[in-house]
Amino acid sequence: MNRASLIGVALHYLTQLRMSVGHRNSLNLQDINVHAEAFFRDFLNLAFDYKLKNINIVERNARAIDLGDEDERIAIQVTSTSELDKIKHTHKGFVASGLDGKYDRLVVLIIGEKRRYRESFLGGDGVFSMSLVDDVWDIPELLRKVGDLRLDRLERCCEFLRDELKIPEPRQSNEVGTLIRLIEVLSAAEEGISVGDNREDPDPDRKIRDRFADHAAFLEQRFVDLHEIYGRALAEVNRHTDLGHVRVRKLQVYLMNWSDRVLTEYGGDPKAALDALTEKVLRMMGTSAVAFDDCAIRYYLVDQLIACNVFPNKRALDA
Image (cartoon, rainbow, N blue to C red; front, side, top):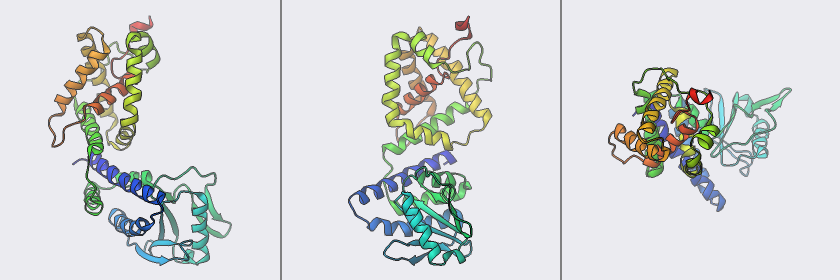
């Protein structure tokens, strides 16, 4: 598997873990938080070469510093709470317990998404300092860090997630796999770098509402409907796909020229051309153990249509 595929696997499992913790906490079932400490101890040790141990510093669960690595001098609290008051309480308990003499860094790992805190730091002026930017991690931040690992280590992390969480990889993960394979195929296509008379500056309003006026409602509604299902998956794939500038450029130019030819073939009808492009891309992608998601392909093409890389406007239209 390549890097983007592995990141898709990590995304699936860590997202499922986050959702599970959130649902159980909403029912006041706190037992999963205890198991999460051991899970993240082993996962962080594997990912980042830490030697974290459960240090069990607990005072009615208010001053809980769950994990510590005395060699790296880092302490980590695992929590499902993102409120600033909780982080401040952790920092206060850390300092009051004298742990700032043993650890140089305190990290709060949120099993969820952190908030935008008005403050940048806690402490200072002689008191142990903690960054609310760099020292508060959430699941998206953890995914970014894991995504930068060496490929062999990333593979081991994914195997760990599979073994520990034992969550089936359903259709949702197939959306990610489909988008990853789609981008791989299109970015490897050979088309040259000439865009001909196609405009490169996006002008989606003019294209959709003027050029495709008869189909504007359909195209806009199709994007809205599919974005609700596939938007987040595509955002994560785009964030972590390791394409260089040249391959991104090839992908854009290939889509411009190829989709323009298909649109001409179908008499300028974007609905028919979009259907044809989806079928053609599916054939280009080959076979998979799990069938590719054709709606994910359609969403990607509509997204690129709005970005003016599919059915590009012509410079002649400006004359």
